[in-house]
Length: 205
Length: 234
Length: 194
Image (cartoon, rainbow over all chains, first blue to last red; front, side):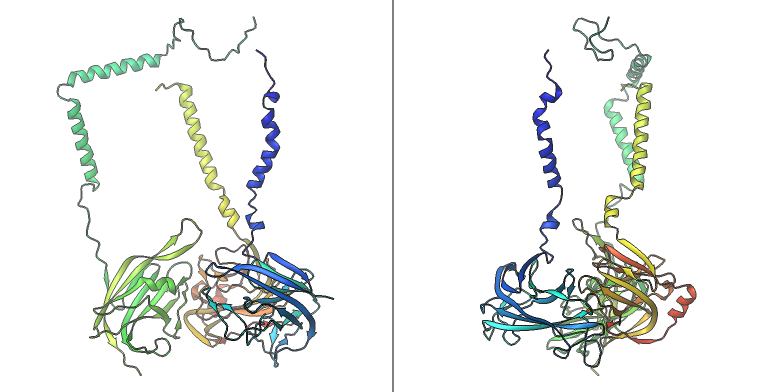
């Protein structure tokens, strides 16, 4: 009886070993939590100084919405006080001025503004602020990305659209202050509305 | 001569060859034992027919199971809930509770604001958590039920720390808290003179699919019937 | 069924092997328990612990019979154990989860969660050290040997990185703390000068 060697009779499967091994590793590598991080701030749009930011998001009723706005950072500079907030000892107050241009029907209310330094460390607007007598201010006024008197359309907690009584202007300015520890310099401004996408504006030097 | 097949290769017997003989003593012994049993049964088979043997076995099974309670009457009526008295320390898992009194009033400051058509019932009780970790007041509220003629409490009661008049949020292990349990109900006429409070055990329920677990209301542990004190607004 | 000597010995050996294998498998920790166990940093009072999200140092423990925070007052039939600590976030302005921080005692009980009066340690700022105090309503008999557990983030049961700090309470200190009749006002988070 002519006997073909084992190698020859199994040559097809031997050739497929490496591709199948690669597929098995890929299938079991659970990349869901590294690629699909929709519950984290994981998808920045990085612009140099200013640009257009577009984001689609879902509200509490799972309806899809889109927001588009042009944002530019006009100034980031140290200051001593802003709206009666002073920096706590050991920190310095940085004032941020932003220019916005958007259609009046865009949902832009309810954002968070932060500063980022060269190491990617984030600094918020609420902490380390004291009043004129040095007492900690536990509830500083949160900055808004929309004019306070004409915020435009908003979504309430149930996902219902609240139409504005006053139409928002097409262009406006916003300002915010961050008390950063002494010795740290900001390199970017983060503007965050809905996870996972956010806007990172590099501060022009 | 070199064999062309390995020594221990199983060989199929050829059709004309005699079958492999296994002359083990055990096989012969088993055959004769079986024959012995068969012969023995043949002697008594006129009295102990297979049907009678079956009946005897069934009787043995019934008697054996009956001795362990298998033939007792099935308890179709639900066990009555034990009744407690005011001031008695009762175990309502995972707490020990002692109910002091039951009060009816129309308003009590900001805790129970005056509303048209609404009246309030308050049970005062001392609650001590006997488990290992905090149990929230939200878990305890659905286990406390108030029943009285013409009274329909609107929802689960709200629990307050009676000493401080602030909402009771959690019960820490081993710390007794004097609690005011307040139900809002429709105003009813005539106002009842006594009401029945039912306190149910809580059980720690582990959800099957997720790692979440929570306290769930289990069977009622005690009922109390207390007279309702009328409290006039100060 | 044929009972041969070799057959009987083989079946007994298989049963013994299964028994030994089951005993070993029961003694080894399960994959779940190893993967879900938090990483614990053990320290004592005054030692800074660098957690994943912040650096925490427990400064000490006081006790009170009544506490006031944010305008709300609470008394207790047990004792209020006040843990003073400093908190410095490292990468984002986070705060310790007051519902998840707890005191675990020698008898295995955990005190903390759902406090009637909250004194949350917020708002905070990255890189800035804040002095905060958390109050725990405790059974006075459980104070001796207690440790306070601070999770880096997440809930009490789901934490990944925790600091377990021995409060150094012996029975004499426990008796002194349990007898306190102080009435304490809890301050908001204050920046500690570097």
